[in-house]
Image (cartoon, rainbow, N blue to C red; front, side, top):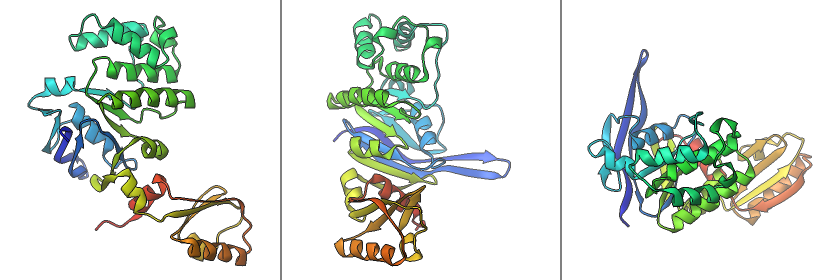
Amino acid sequence: MPAAVVFDHVAKIYASARGNVCALDGVAFTIGQGEFFGLLGPNGAGKTTLISILAGLTRASSGRVAVMGHDVVADYAAARKSLGIVPQELVFDPFFSVRECLAIQSGYFGIRRNDAWIDELLAGLGLADKADVNMRQLSGGMKRRVLVAQALVHRPPVIVLDEPTAGVDVELRQTLWGFIANLNKQGHTVLLTTHYLEEAEALCGRIAMLKQGKVVALDRTANLLAGTASTMLRFKTDAALPAVVAGHARVTGRVAQVTAHDAGEVETILGQLRQAGVKVEDLEIGRADLEDVFIGIMQKEPA
């Protein structure tokens, strides 16, 4: 599969009064053309720094990054034209309408008579009835949709979505993912960062996980899921879990999730809960999800 994005041993070191800070430490992986690829990691892992280098907003300390064969430093104009980036922040021009913003964005890439594609973007992202509304009058969710449209207005082969659904409603998520999934089917490459791991599990064929500036996992989503405990007990309780269970459990409020590797271990865990007098509600037994995989990998001590 031809490469759409190449990260070739990328490092980034920031100088500070307390000494050098390593944000990226030899990150190396390739995203193939037409992939829907996930980049995951906790806050401070280096995801935004890596995307900033890809976008040309930050210069790598060492290593090389290329988009559709174009080096982001040596061939920056072609690299930028190949990219459409939806940033985390809501950045907008308060002096123009939605349609005017998209027309201006088209002009940045030297594209004239782009009305047909702009109309398609407006319709596909649920913005058709807001086309002539000033950006200042839009809700946060609508502004987020405009950011997506701006990133796509020049039909880039590579689309980067940096936390695109943070703080937005369910309707926008469904609209956005339906539209982006369709573009991916047409051959566009998509790079997604998100803290909503159910989105990454549903959408991404491959996933890389960053921790402290290093790639700690890189595989197909199905393989990552297959490599963890196959069973997960989920239930609600008001009682503290016994130590023998708490050691391999994750508790969020009243909801506890406990990993088990087979049916025998499920029976053992339930017996330990009964023996400790822990009353459980809404018990579910299912497979581990990407969040379970992610937490397990992040909790591992570095080699």
